[in-house]
Structures are given as structure tokens and as C-alpha cells.
Length: 340
Image 1: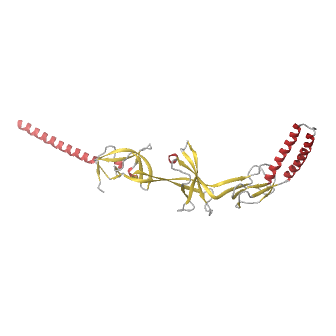
Image 2: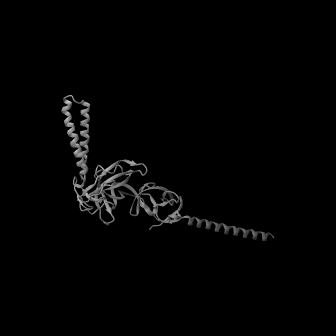
Image 3: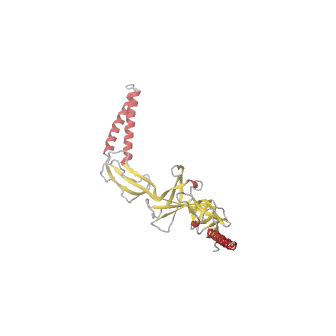
């Protein structure tokens, strides 16, 4: 009986021993499985060139609607047509002079009356107040005639090209302009620049202009005007870039990209494949290697240059970041680094 009891106890001990052995093996195997095989690369300090590109449309440097000062007048002649080039102060249209001649005849009558009343006043025949009334009538009629004379010949205030003609000779001038003129020997591009670059943009700085119609080619413009106030909704400020167009290859309305060179700075660059985005948020993060494990760090990204991104905060130069098996990693996860 005692012998059977001893055998049973010995068998139980062997089972327990085998069980502990298997448990230890499973634990060791689990520990091995927790280590994630990954590659890493060092965050490098590098010079980051700050270039920004903004899209816009090319606009005429100046444009002007040609309209007479008074409405209800007949157009006698229009001397130019769409596509014609005009010079500043050139006569581009004339108005019917019938009304002008009528007002000139009225002016002659008023002027004669005023001149006849002067000696009457000196002789005491009328009061000074009456003489002033005659003088005012003369001055008002003279102003009417001068205005009609100025408008009998309509001149363009700018040099440029006629881009629209809305009337024909003999038409009665109404609301819309007779002509529209654009100056296109030089053009301008308006860019809405991010507020962070306000100290970097200076009048006279060069800007590269590219248009789709001339692939691979750029035109040099220069900053000609910086608007002093920012748009509070977009946190941008307007910049006017003037572009020479002596060969008339560019036209108003073309889609353009304006590239500003804002200088350079020292940054910390890492491969873009090392950066993950938290689902449902704008947070970006990386896994930084610390010994045989990784630490998750939120990062603020700057400019991307080819396959590398400038990290504004979150990673220091020289630190190692994981670049493979990122979906298997978590904060504090054990890792094993690949050599290549």
C-alpha cells in the first residue's frame, strides 16, 4: 500500500515538473514574440530651404474703363478697335458736338449779359448782389462748356491694348464703358502669403512665375507692393508681384504659380515613412528608439523635401527613429533592430 502511494506521488511530481517546464518555455517564447523586428535611421540636422508656392491668376498691370463724364450723348466716332494698341492721352473716341455747340451759344449770351452789367453796376444802376448773380451764371455756364469740350474728345489715361468695345459710332452712350483698356507690357500676380513669412517678404525680392502653357519655363517677377494688413480669416497678407512682359508671351487670366524664396534655416530631417498620423485627429507621431524599446512621440512637421520632412519639434538631431514595422509598434514596445 505504501509502495503504491509512493509511486503515485512520484508520478504527480513528474507531471508538475513537466508542466512547469512547458510553462517556462511558453513564457520565454512569448517574450521572444513581443520583440518587434524593425529598422531605424538617425534624425539628421540639415539646411532647409524655405520656398513657398502660391497659385493665382495673372492680372493686367493697369486697366481702365473709357467713359465720358456725361450720359445721354451720342458717340460720333470710335477710333480704335479690340486688339489695337493705344498710348496714354491718345484720343480713342469723339462725341457728337451738337450739345456742345448749343451750350457754347448759351455761354456767349450769358457772357455778353455779364459784360454789359459791369458798367451798369459802376454807374449805380444795379446792386453788387445782382452783379454777383450775373457772374455766377457766367461761371456755371463756362464750367458746363469746359466739361463738354473735355468730353467731346475721349482720351485714354494709360497705354495698353483695347480688350473690349461695347458701342459703335452713332450709338447713344448709356451705362457701360465705351472701351476697356489693359496695360499688358508688364503684368502682376497677387499672392496670399502666410503670415509667418511677413518678415521675409521685401519689396524688390525676386519671385519665380510659372504657367502651364510653358511647361518647364519660369518668368522672373519682383515684389512691387506688400499690403500692410492681414486677412484675419485666412491669416495671410497680399503681395503684388510685377512681371515684365515685353515679348507678350503672358496674358491676363492665365493660371500662374508664384514661388517665393524665403531663405533657409537649420532643421532636423527624418524620412517621411517614419511618421504616422493618429486616426481621427491631426496628431502626427514617430517611434524613437531607446535601448531595446521604442517611445512614441508627437511631432510637429515642417517642409517636405523629396522623401524627408523637417521636424519642428518632437525629435532631436541624432536620435534614432523606427522606419519599418510601424503598425506593429506601440509605446514602450520591445524591439530588435535589423542591421540592414
